[in-house]
Length: 62
Ligand SMILES: [Zn+2]
Image (cartoon, rainbow, N blue to C red; front, side, top):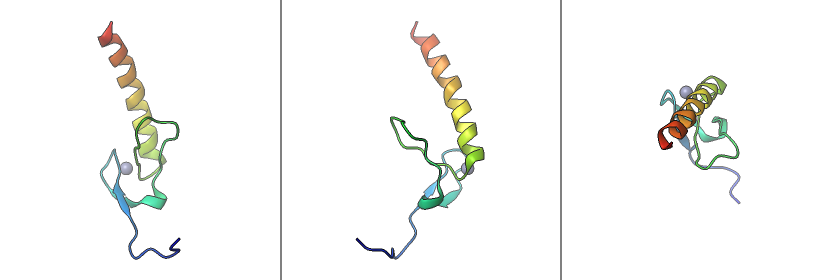
């Protein structure tokens, strides 16, 4: 509707907590929850961490 927004919405990177404009944030697709990253570097780091966490979580359940 409104093409111009009065302020740029910002979110904090899930890894380094740096604030970035929502439009520039990287968000993983097909995720159960929404995560935001300032760039591919943090996104990749988060992916690696979450993969490890998944494996640990499965091991804990059994
Ligand atoms: Zn970051």
